[in-house]
Image: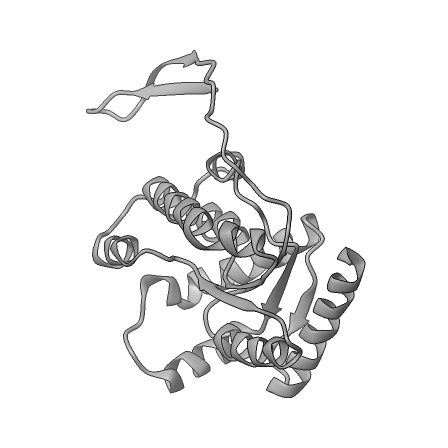
Length: 224
């Protein structure tokens, strides 16, 4: 790893050094089935997850639903402070590690299905569009179990914003139209790079849910 040092007064780089770090191991189980829905705010993740959980429970599966960020303390810090992008990347990674250790890994070990609202790919979108290098985000999430299936819900930003307005409540800094446009484009890049299925979420809820279920059923069958 190359560590760079910067002058605190003028901001110019004053040197760099290569550091060989031994990173601690983390337990990542392989059992169960972990899926997530991702995309910008307003694409309908919450509604689709609710319907999907009802569908799976109706088929007799034990389902655990999770949402990122997980810790209330992390949520408060993120939404109460004007944080640098790298600090956000560290906080989201720390939150994800706790979520996986406390909830996701035990559920998967028990053979349950975990359904996530957002995924590690969210950090590869939001933190990268804010200026954090992709390799840094990947390093921070190096021992995270990625979902067996991540579905990206996509819709034009104007439709997403209309939905958010109807939802009411406070607006976060992530719901800035310009930032959302960048994030939407980045989600599509990430989906292509990591071969994630993309669903047009501007269509009726029932059509979107039908396509999500088809993707899930195929993934469950292939995993046995």
